Length: 397
Figure 1 (cartoon, rainbow, N blue to C red):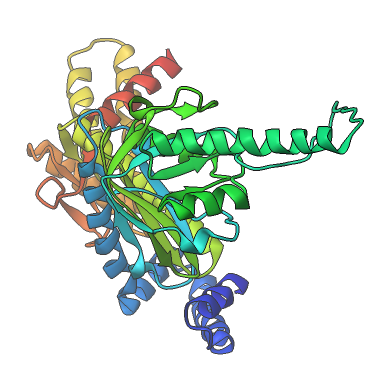
Figure 2: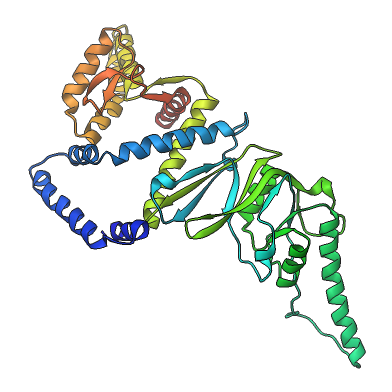
């Protein structure tokens, strides 16, 4: 209830009381059915059909996931798909970015003067500090005159400006660092129409390097164009209440980022988990273009095949074969239980259909009936089945 109220407040800012009252009333109205033994899945299905919202979001995210996987290169590297969660807004405000995107880091004065849009920029990735700071540990300096102190101060400034000048001379227009970039450096870059951001998380820095190329440098003594990344477009944009940096048209690898919108954090986190599963399924289907019917169709066909083979075996071993064949029926049986369907009736129909040679006959939980799942586009990658059966065989041997 708390999460529902938070989601309502984050999305529209009003109606938190009414949404809790409505949700409580729905649960109250459904309680007698649960007490009478009605399967919860039947109630969930009815409520889902009535709202219609879930199916719209499912189609929306299905297209987004397929587009995201299609952006990747032939090796389909999973680390090139990033998922960023942005609180606020509606789920249908989520978007697919054809590149790398991450939240704007903390910035100092002068950042507002820096350009926020570049075409074909060079990107410098650093793991060094670009700011003046006092030494705290194991530091000792003995000075006898004011001139000595001034020389130390001048040397510190000189070292910083030398680093900044080398970065500028390399041709970089965008400077990202895992460590802080101070106000002096921020202003210096702004005066030269350069963009900088410090305290970038290591994960985001690694993704930019993998997508744009270049190297993460721990020194700028020999920085040049060969160690810089490249992209077609860089820009900064407001997303919800946060600012995000975007790298599109990355030179080294095809990358993308899913920006998820939503109210409560728990709701967005659940969406993220669902999207991760969907991405893995699409990725597996694309890497292994062989698919089979889902809904227990393959398991029932294997069960039929093993039963037929068992009839040719003499002796008590035939019982073991039949027991092994029955074990495959647990998959469609469990699907029926989860969906609140009569498992006994469905299994009998499945056995009959498979005995007639309908190898793709499986459970269709939407129609609550047996159907041709291959024609109904209820598919699973064949590699998933192969690995599953191999693991089960190894486990029991």
